[in-house]
Image 1 (cartoon, helix red, strand yellow):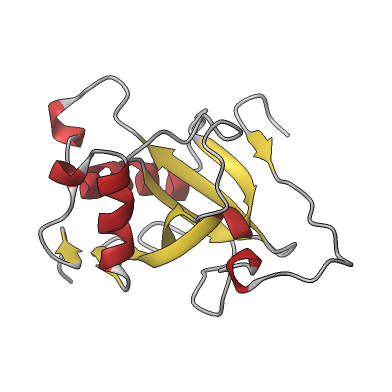
Image 2 (cartoon, helix red, strand yellow):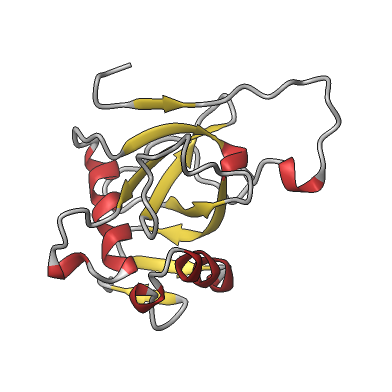
Length: 162
């Protein structure tokens, strides 16, 4: 693992019964493997099991994108606009910045390998834009973070057409 990558994977105890809220959101809709330029990646928000104190690198209101790994974990890239750039105020711009880092495999500390139970996939991002399948979950999370003013205006954000 490189110094720029944080391993926040927690191993589950396999013999325990799991409640429905502990089941991974890694599904058939979760893109597997790093996408090429303009390829598909998942858009995520922290699940109810996410512990912000144990995962302090992923800040409130971050745009979080990523892909599934063969071991069932997720690799996520995130952008929180820590330096208050005006062009990154809106959530969709944060997600796009994280996506650009992801597809370029750019060196960054804003990257983590995480247990899929701690993230909930709410949409898809690619080179054309973002499609939110669960916009209400994103809105809930941004409201919880006191970042509702950064929410996208619609469930589909297009920045490029074919």
